[in-house]
Image (cartoon, rainbow, N blue to C red; front, side, top):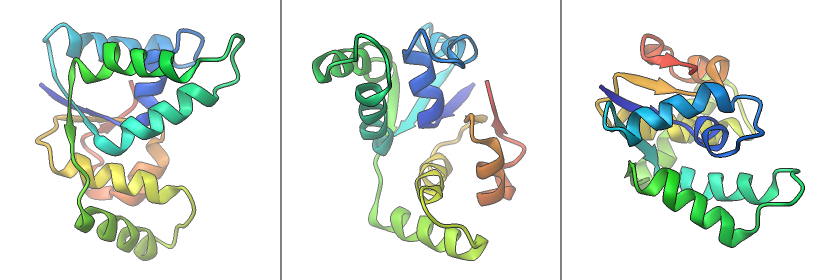
Length: 144
């Protein structure tokens, strides 16, 4: 089985105190254990780093710690889809076509990356947004 994980799932899998950790961690473990092939967007690398270093935890996750968490949990196990200029253009076009703006363009960008992988499942905690942006992928979209 091939899985594509969006940033929301990757972040939840890395933070024990995250409300969705118990749901996201088994996805990461299935990839780490070799039961599934895992893919993520190269853009998610920056988004995960940003989320980890800004989440309101005490003590805060320092940049060096976030880098280590990403290396151990994600880079070691997930293959990355490089984002192309065309993917950025298509993400904007999809948002314009669906009449959505703001940060939803990042969801559209991740969807464009997921389209590059023969993913059996595309995991996200933003199901409503992903379904709105990519109704043709609804049979593969799911939350952990």
